[in-house]
Image 1: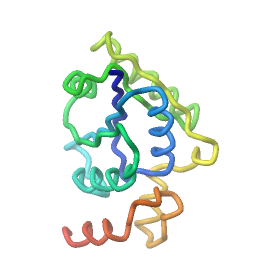
Image 2: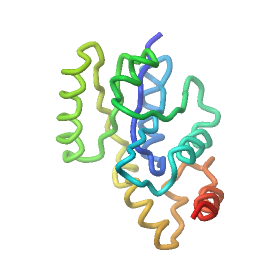
Image 3: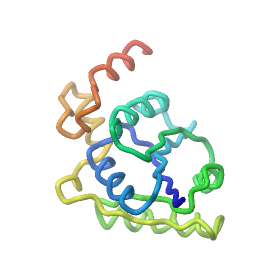
Length: 162
């Protein structure tokens, strides 16, 4: 079974992320969407809420697992049996940054490949940063998010924890 890991902060998971995931599913038997947890950063949504948002977003898609992890991406790949790391690209700047990370991962784990998948042109402008900015300023970000995601529910949960 060919398994790939699609890691990221996914804060929140957007239509661009979903587009890349769907592309990856055409190449792999299973794709694991892995929410990375960085204790040095405080995210907009807690990692457990990000996992729930992604689970809503991928409802109906087969062969997708959603989890969170701490530590090195290559370590979660080994733990989950993934032989490939999926990374989405929107711009040439993304490519430059992701190339460096891919080289470091390849040095640490030569048996794990990185695969870059460009976002579809209709999603290439969508970033989690833009979505967070819209949400922080009281705007509706529904047009940037998968239709299965009730973002208002998660904003309420976020507000209740403050």
